[in-house]
Image (tube, rainbow, N blue to C red; front, side):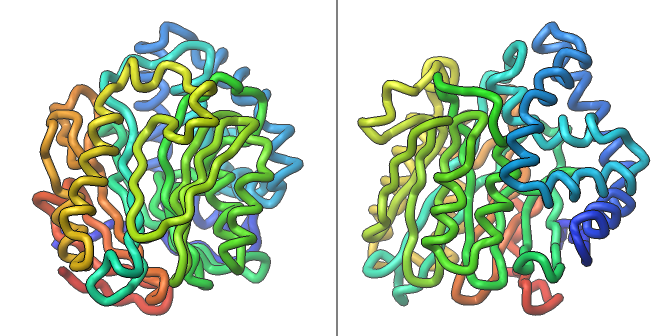
Length: 358
């Protein structure tokens, strides 16, 4: 069994961040060097230009989530790096999609889903996604505890404050990158994810997301034990879809009223159109009998490769680094460390240290 690394961080924002940075110091430095080299090579811009761009996002972050900016300060201190470099890591999606120049990866983005009610074998709620990134970006699980926020278990990367996760109140959120036309100097998506997971109920989570002064487009699939909602957002507008059985989303706008904000993501990465459709088809075929085992097989699907739900390193720059499945009622997640077609799903819980293979 190949477990995901779990990094435990406790205390206030600075203490959590310092523990995070100290624990992944070498990995974070390696991640930053590799990613900056790749971003500058593929975009043709200098590191200073990337840093200058991300500096324009900092004021909105300080206003929306000052405690998370403090956490980034702690990460930088613990890793022995400057704040600007660690903040840049937390803006990698914005740099990739909306910065001074775009990187050139041929495939991009993840595929998310929700299933509940009559769609599942036992009426339980499940949400999840594949986690697809360049191979230089390795995933970790962060277990974050502190008196100022709910305890959270987050799948992310070294030095990043957010990714996809679940909190102690049984609220879970998945994330898809979108590229909108109305981008501006707002909040990067990892900070919006963490703010979502500070909520104690689903309505509060939705409010935290739609009120964010966003830097770009983004999509969230969010759920508690009884309800799931898809939140599709440009930088200035949003649309919600309540899950009545199943839903799926990839990396393009689907709400008719938001199509005007679609940039060129489907033109550059048309696999997003197929992944979203394929996920919906597979969920429909299993409607009424969906359970964890069925969803794990769906996450391992290779139809339409190389731009499939489960992608491999040869898929032109992107790889499924993990696949994650949440059960909000259990406050737990199941995740693969690598491609779900070849790596087992292990259970990770906020409530216990145990990991069980499925």
